[in-house]
Image 1 (spheres, rainbow, N blue to C red):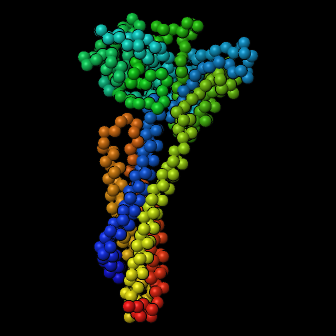
Image 2: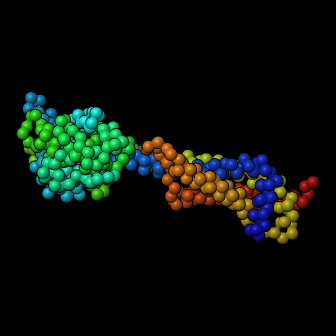
Image 3: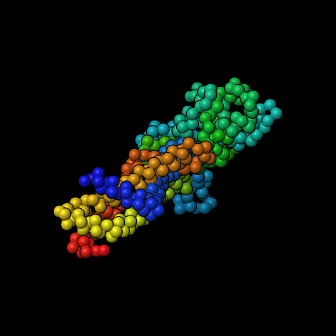
Length: 412
């Protein structure tokens, strides 16, 4: 019975080739759209996360500002800064962050041979290097021993290496930063375009021990070893608000300001930007758009099968007259509709998956979203297709079962 219905469906498609092609196109395009658009939505989410997290995943940044206007008269709103003492206290007392680091930076001239550049020189401790999460392509990273002995060693970003050292540059070369010699001990791996950054991108930076920056280029307004920025990492993005409250409370106590003074202790995270983006809503919108396209194809199948019922009324009447049950007629047209939807769905799935794989292997620019194929995405397309197939088959099957054999047998 089912085999006969499938053969009949194929005959119907062949008998009305142009109409069948237009109808099947809607199903193929709709199924491919579900796979491609939902995959593109997931790819966009991952691309944004990657772009924001290239400077450090699940990272918070803390800057010292000045006493807030609600906490002090305008004349007494002093500027504030962090020292390594505050960083050490935060490391010891903070429970939410799993890692705390410190950075100090300067914009300084650097030379190598006949080349000269102005570079973003970052003083880092090993914890800050770990939080940034940038690997070393060659050589070694900064160590605790480098920080302790205030060593003049440097890690170069990929663009800094190309522009300053050139093709002849090697590990062990010595560059001069503000006239002081530094040994190149490592090259950072390429990071690419960052959606979150302060001043220059990591590829354009030079990393040196934080104590080296504090010793050679001290702040003019104080004798303290100033930390430009405190950074920390949290194990779970859902802990962002809790980490802000804890970090602000500890650091505010150390520098003598109110724990609710957000101007004195300023905390920012790329997670704030991501959380404000309607990524989930966008994914649902793309799914609804793709499903609507598939529903349009389902309407085409519905019209095609209704025409088939009208054209085959004599055949239906004969079958009913010789003993076929109405449920047999219902099953026949339902299976025929399912066959047409199945063929369109298979072709659409192949097209959608193929388009996703093709884009994945194309040499696209940095941070251009690429559709992500997941079993759930293909499953979603098949579920939507099944719903469309059932909806498209119910009405024609019901119309076919209501054909009156007596009337059809008297038709010319």
